[in-house]
Length: 471
Image (cartoon, rainbow, N blue to C red; front, side):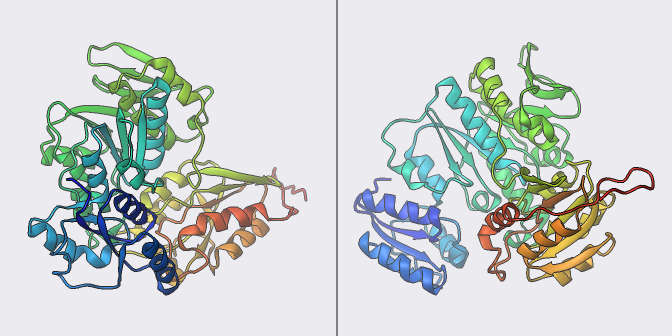
């Protein structure tokens, strides 16, 4: 669509939404921005939009409110406008997600990554491998909010890597990635899908539904629910499997300790060493590396460049990242673990006794009642944070030493006081940020990191040897 002179509506005033507003305005569109970010933030946004010569609409609108526009852009934080968005689409108005608008404006080959866990790490690793080969590649979605920059992009991209959530996928109709990556599906994000795991899986399936036999679908070979979804939806793309448990049929990638092995369609195998890589610490990151390796090989990245990225692996903020070792106690930041699947992975990544800080927004469909099954034998103390600790305590009553703390800062301080040498303090909330908890919000990872870095030295019991304890 030609943008200049068109009357466009952007729904949602998150950083990603505002990025689209700015880019479309620079391209000559008449932009009206719809959203609600709270009274104080709305006032600041209104002034910013005036400078851009854009209209602002705050709060709810009628179902017919978008009928007069030439096109509609759906961005995050746009839940108030779903009904109006769907009505505009049904009326024949070009109503697409922000990612669809970017893809339509950029002719690059598309690689789309989704899953309950591991999206960001896999997408970033894929981008690094492509760039190491010399491709001009960009990353869109996830922690990268400057979507508008891709609309203004002058130099042609070879590849556009998308990290795409179920929310965006649910409203996406035209996405057709050349390579789709489906990492996993865990019970998560029920608040976005009416508490229905089936509806959540249906949204995830959008990543491969429009693919053809010329495209590729990379997925975990041992995830039964992925197999069933792919079978039921009759995926047309060529299947590329990865596995941490056993060899796979070609083409694919598998782990056979201590190395990753990639086998092409003709049966030729390449081996990638993990000896220099921090990724070998946790199985989850090995799986992310395998998925990225599968994609890179499909794109023609040479083995030496894949190996270089594997060797240089670094943990991303909020994803099983070690913050500090204080008097024999490790503090691990897994604050991006917003669902049960991510937290289960975290709990099973360690052999140390765990003091687990958990809590946030309690949502339908989160299946939090399953957590004790995976936490028993791993967790020596659970510290509950947020505004809904009593509800969470009911789910976790079978665990030892469940304490309702409420404050994230206090939970960190208490964990530090009671931890013994050899313990591990893990912040893996298993829930989205708590909108009723001003301390947490979307910055709870930063709150955790600052609190941990500010902890004082603490006298501890050493790990017990027989019946003798040293102080």
